[in-house]
Length: 197
View 1 (spheres, helix red, strand yellow):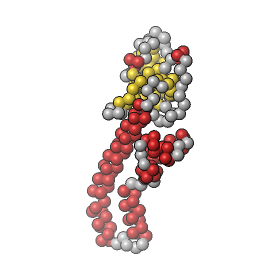
View 2: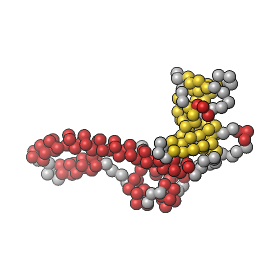
View 3: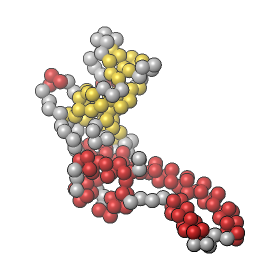
View 4: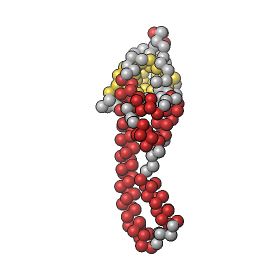
């Protein structure tokens, strides 16, 4: 899913106006509009060639020109699109970190989206994702079951697995590393989970 589609989905899901969404993520109305209507350069070039052909302008000379040119252009534009996609992903991660920095200490209901030997990746309903390090699971010593992608407590036999809903507290963000840290929030603490943010 492209960044434009993701942003549109978040806006609709959160029922945000374009102006409010722009304020939250420090982007202008025009930038959001451009993301929603994005088109890649290779698509544009192919459409131009198709139009040229439909209008009868694609003769042998033009075909030879495109044969010579398009291989190099396609390699370069593919590389640039991959680079742009990576820049978009990193920017979104950074903006999510900036946003979550204002929610440190708050409790949220999340779903486990990844299990590794170093911890649990969790995702909020608004697509913010972060990590609970295995060292933060203080109630037991947990070992990683790679076959079942689970963390299992040695003494309690408590299991953390993919798709499992849990409650967490935001403990920190690192904008440079683009990471968000969580710890499990105890249900006994009486803390009420925040809704969608």
